[in-house]
Each structure stands twice: as C-alpha cells, then as structure tokens.
Image (tube, rainbow, N blue to C red; front, top):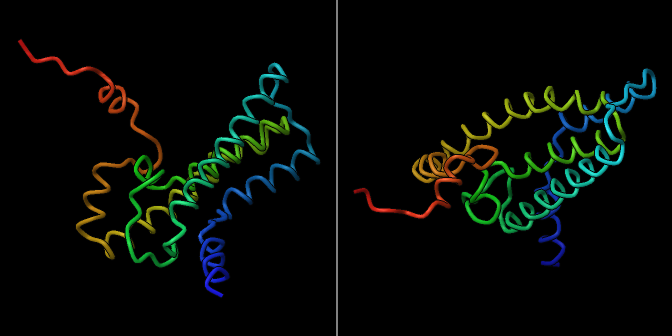
Length: 169
C-alpha cells in the first residue's frame, strides 16, 4: 500500500507543461496543413534533435527522481540537490529541450518556432511558482535564488569556477 502512495506522489510530480504540449500539437497540425521544413543537413538536424530529446528526457527523469519524496504542487521542503543544485527549474529546462528535439527530429519548423512562445508562457508560470516558494521558504529561497540560476548554468560563473586560483601579485 505504501509503494502505491509513493508511485502516486512520483507520478503527480511530473509537470506536463501545457505550453510545450500545445506548441508541439500546434506545430504538428500546421506541419500537416502547410509543411515547412527546417533545411540544413538532414542527418545533422536529426542528430541534434535526438540529442536534445535524450538530454531533455534525462534531465526531467533526474529531476523527477530528486523530487520523489516531495510533492511539487505543495512542497514541504525546498529542493536544492541533484539537478536543482544547477537549475531552479530543471524539469522545465528538460521539457524545452524535449520540445526542441521533437521539432528537429520531425524536421518541423512550426514546432521549433512554437518553442519561444511556449517558453515565454512557461516563464510566466515559473514567476508565480517562485512567489509561492518565496512565501513558503523566505530565507531558504532567498539564498537559493542568489546561488542557483532560474534555468541554466551561468556559463561565465562556471567557467570562472573551473579556473585555477592564483594569488594576486
């Protein structure tokens, strides 16, 4: 019985961003009505698409496993480990990569073009989620917000973190 509840919590944590799903669906419909290909080397486009879809799926899975003991709709703790140590919203990053990957794999310019629109809509939702987290975990979220980027690793900071430290002369 306990295992059933754990699976229910795990499955309830999978965010299905309607914005990305709608963008993919609209892209597929438009592609059928007015085909618009991406162009470029077909093998390269499909390879990048497969890599994007695989990476996005892996990130969503990793984030889901990291959140397995917390209900994301009403968290009782702030997630800061696993992928949440690198992005405050790894599942949304994963879904965006999956969205891109689907468009590239299908050689579907409409689906790829829908990604920025879907991303703006997702971002609006994220801002609301962050307000809730800030109210629920004021001190922890304030510190977390300062140390972890909203979506992707800050490359400049990561690059600097990898540089050896030399004393100033």
